Amino acid sequence: MSRQFHFDLKRPCAHCPFVNTAERTPLTHGRAVELVSAIRDEGKTFVCHETSDSLGSKSVHDQQCAGVMLLVDKEKGLAGHSLFRIAMFLKILDPANLDRTAPVFASFEAFTEANKET
Image (tube, rainbow, N blue to C red; front, side, top):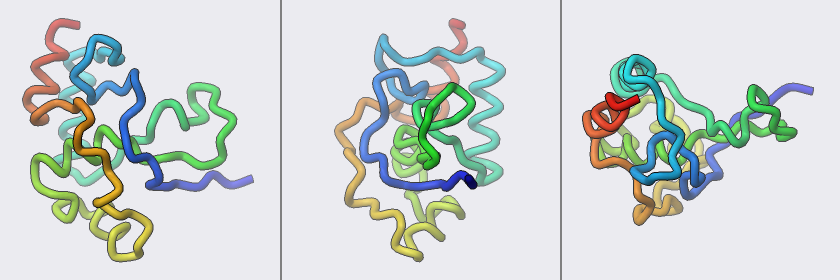
């Protein structure tokens, strides 16, 4: 069965590395910098680890990480990211559905700074 990629998440999971809470999954500083470069600078994506088969999820629907979508939206708007712009054009991503009260980091820089401690 082929895996599918979706934009249905509205809020980051409790352990999302992109939320600014004690429950988040910390990353090494190097990995955080690598993710910022890939997502912000190269237009790549990040699948929610709770929906990814790599961590044993039984889901066949990889979901785009809501934390990433919210952080990109804060930095440059979802239309500033090529994949999200295409998803909005195809009407498979509706930015109005994202929970903007979720405690994501204020910026990619704040995200990388928070991961300097690990």
